[in-house]
Length: 341
Image 1 (tube, rainbow, N blue to C red):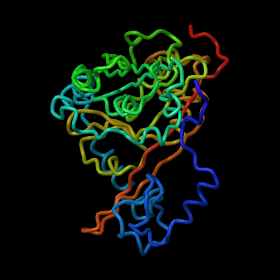
Image 2: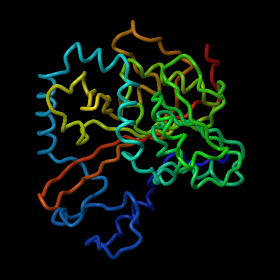
Image 3: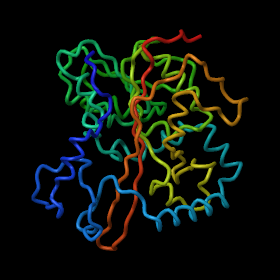
């Protein structure tokens, strides 16, 4: 397998080229590259619908803190906590039944943000096994397949929602030998169908980790570690604390700090950058040591890259500013590691 940076980085030359974009951000400037629309003049803020890498302003931060205080004062009832936490797959089954695979757009930006996927899909890349966890309707797996030139690439697309897996299997793009979709709960003790320990080169979690309860994180990290080959990489993208979706939650949706239930019964967590790094490098201690299994020393990942992706969305008609925040990262299982017990 070719060795490339698993995640996109912005070096000095890239930064300099971004600074040379015309100050009027002219719509005639082509081609527009995802992630390069930088706001350098506040007077231009309402010229476009979106700006990249914009920090939240003080007014938004103050409003967010007021929202968090309101959310904490009116949490989900203890009865509903049990209802939503006891069988999360049920709520995701309902979600996919109602949305029939049309809710999410295909993630065509994947190879730009994670160059290792470009390497894996080249004709001469050799035998590569990709495991996608929380594959949903296939909006990550199928775009990878569409660009694949590697006859020896194998994608295992897993989700704990039976309905999601059924949606994937009915997709026209599923009719090839390079993909296998299965029901699998990443927090369970069993391995995904067709996979052995240390058989995976790349594990992908795109907006998956946030759907788990904090008490499920340690089992999830351990299972992914067990499946990856030494040197295998985790590609990660999820919600960051302060994202518009978090700030907008009303009363009766707060499960615990940064953890909420949506109106459709699905759950979502919003991560801090340092918190996420601790979870994956095992510098994290769960608040309730009686839940789940303790971390193995052997299971600590190396952090290759971790960063916050901010975007300012603009409603020009109403002159509104809306801040989005995501965390993107890549982690690696060390080449030399102790055997999982």
